[in-house]
Length: 132
Ligand SMILES: O=c1ccn([C@H]2C[C@H](O)[C@@H](CO)O2)c(=O)[nH]1
Ligand SMILES: [Zn+2]
Image (cartoon, rainbow, N blue to C red; front, side, top):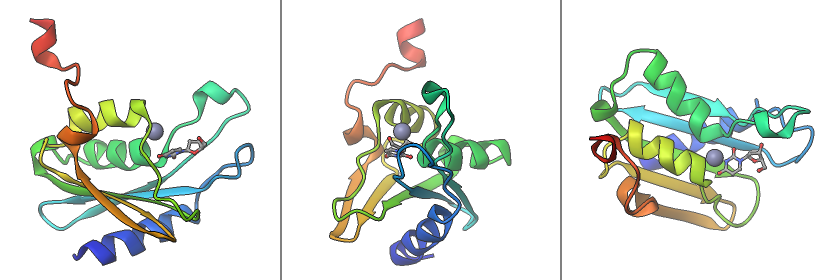
C-alpha cells in the first residue's frame, strides 16, 4: 500500500469520528509490515479527559489484533483542517512504545503532508530502559 493509499484510508476512518465536543474530526491508520491496516478515529466523552485520539485508537486496534510493535511500518493521521495534525504528547509516548523508532508517521491536512519518524516525534522518550 502506498503512502497516498494509507492517507486515503485514514480519511475514510475520520468519517467515524465521534467528536460532538471539539467538532475536530481525526482519522488514523496503521500499516503493518504484512500489508494489513488498522484504522481508528477520535472518540470523545462528556468527561473530557476520557477522549481518545485517532492515533491511539488505531495503534491499539493493531496491537489488540496481534500485530507486534516491530512489525508496524507506518501510521497516517489526518484532519480536515489545512494544517496537518500534530500528534499530542500522549500519542507520541504510545507511538514510541508501540512502533519502531524508524517507523514513518504521515500527517496530512488539506494543505499538505508532513512526514517524520517516531523517534524524531519524541526525542528522549521514557521507555522500559528507564525502569531498570
Ligand atoms: O493528533 C490529534 C490531535 C487531536 N485529536 C483529537 C482529540 C480530541 O478528540 C480532539 C481535540 O483535541 O481531537 C486526535 O485524535 N489526534
Ligand atoms: Zn493524541
